[in-house]
Amino acid sequence: MIQLEHLSVDLDEFHLRDVSLSVSENEFFVLMGPTGAGKTVLLEAVAGLVPVQDGRILIGGRDVTHLPPEKRGISIMYQDYALFPHFTVLDNIMYGLHFHRVDKDQRQERKKQLIEQLNLGHLLHRYPATLSGGELQRVALARALIVRPTVLLLDEPLSALDPAFREEIRDALVTLQERSGVTFIMVTHDFSDALSLAQRACVINNGSIEQTGDIADIFQRPTSRFVADFVGMKNCYQVNFRDTKAVIDGIEIETGRTWWRAYGYIAIRPEDVVISKKPLDSSMRNVFEGRIRSVRDKGFFYEAEVLVWNTVFVSLITKSALFDLDIREGVRVWIAFKATSIHLF
Image 1 (spheres, rainbow, N blue to C red):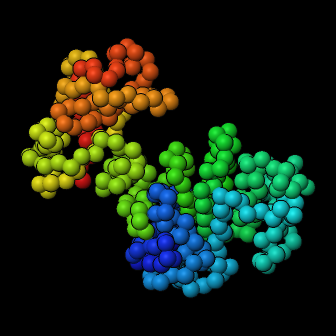
Image 2: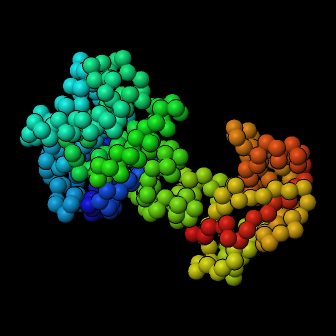
């Protein structure tokens, strides 16, 4: 559906370098990465809003690299909604059809369908200034979709919403994407949004793609230290590999498989590191004694740092476990984790 081939963009402070990416028809795809990574620039390049220095953009097999935005069959929705304040909700929704040849019956059918799907019937005569964040978001979605784009680009659509509206719009996005047949590409910083909405994603860093694949693979099997840090692995170490072991400052960690390089990285999610007050009698192949270096409140969980020799391991524990195990700074503990929870790259 969408094929980016060696795309390069130079906008002074923001750059894209040799970006190649493929997004399938009717897919919900997410672009992730830190602020300034180039996610919005990539959306705007696909939409035709910024010039491309090199490479090609193909949509449905058609080369649109140098076509104007209105010739690409794409809608883009920014996080600030960009609704016309002097237009009613209905006028905002219908605005895009002024630039498309659509007969009266089709206009009415599209309007009726979107108003029903997004529950906008009671808002049609109101103005944007009188709407809540969730209502503004639903109006902006209706305006973007009424022109029947082949692709909808969403730039941080949920970032400004409170949790109640966020869940509502997530549900609306899933329903719309499934029913409309439109390919969605969304920029987000929020991992829960990505996990809830997308089938596949890519992680962008400094204008280049670090990793592309299924959401689960990116979160569970990062292929670089940057991606491991970005998705919250926490425990990421440079190691020497010896047979099936990874060695960090004299600590030998059993990985359960041999690695093809002598040097590299391992990563372990903090929720896979178990803390106990005595060595666990279990099948876990990695058990080490250490001391609690710090404990931080993370809301529903606590994050405990355990110093094993000169290496710090991070574990997530519940509040009840914190008190039951008397986890506090300086306390001697054991940590354990499975060889299968270790990611090598």
